[in-house]
Length: 192
Image 1 (cartoon, one colour):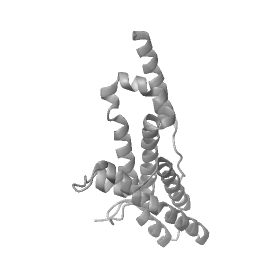
Image 2 (tube, helix red, strand yellow):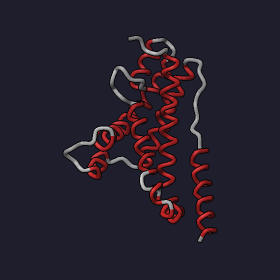
Image 3 (tube, helix red, strand yellow):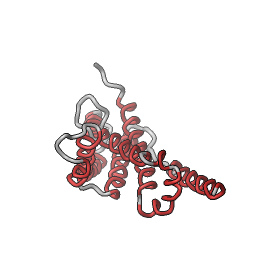
């Protein structure tokens, strides 16, 4: 079976990185120490909705980011797109070296995310607890955020090398979540 066109696959991998960051930002907004304390009472007021919403954002992040670095040959991943763009002659040596350096930085973090995907979420391991999987992965939120930064830097270098537009993270969903929580807080205060 023939693969989708290279430029389309490059766009898709960039879109997956953007979605991963969006889900990370939303998860971090609801679970991060700096914001959770401020919104906890509102979340508690709507506890059945917020019980699993932050978890869904984390799972979505993990699935998308693990996919961006997947090693299966039939998937759209940076791991396969980089050599393909090199083979197409679209990269000069200097940009190729920068991409290789960024990929070397990303792989150890991507492996941690893959542990979460394979053992905690997509394929729930029957021999280890959910919390222990996180201990094994030993990944911190700042590392998760950094992985999206590095992945997008790689994707953008690949996109630009092919004459395509580079991509940027969108902060509006997190801002909208904050506005929504503020609106819910005000509504709750008016009802009480």
